[in-house]
View 1: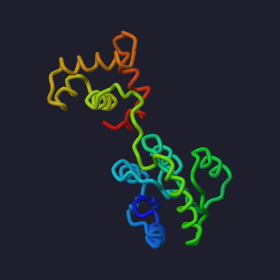
View 2: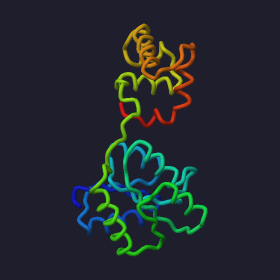
View 3: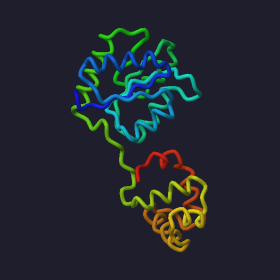
View 4: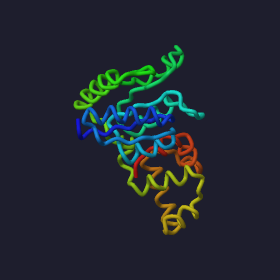
Amino acid sequence: MEDKRILVVDDEMIIARDIERILKSMGIHQIRIANSSSEAIDISRKFRPHLILFDVNLEETKDGITSAAEIGSFMNVQVIYVTAHSNQSVLTKAMETNPANYIMKPFDQAQIEVAVRVALNDSQNHSFGTLRQAPYPELTSGEIRILKLIADNMKTKEIADELFLSSKTIENHRYNICKKLQLPPEKNSLIKWVYEHKVEIGNWQE
């Protein structure tokens, strides 16, 4: 269990530190804390946790369930929701993301320990803590980078300047990407495809 990485997401630092204390008492020391959804997503990309203890009701527009689902779109990870609310609609939404467990606040140490041990035991047989591969393995890292820049509304000349390449080289890359994605020959087919898959592309690893 010592080699497992756990992310605690809660905007109440006292609660986050309490969970951290419990985890350390279990012999887990690779722990990170995030106080917001954006911070949780950023840390997850770099830290690659096996397990996330996610507060459902973060004090921001994006709740913990939505954020956990976004993280799950780019990596394999177990999630335990921790919440003070037992609203049925919230519970139903949470269950749709297949969490490892759902813990009500106020919790005690035994609840956290049991839920974490069960989740980590399950992770022994799965690839949790790893990034998902882009669904188009034939695309090179450079081509994925170009798709990300197109998704950021950058034109061919702007992409060329950003990557220190010629516009002709970028045009060639775009042509090759269209072939690999089997897109129709219409002029704006790549741009249309990128905007339809913008969120997905943003989660791809280069």
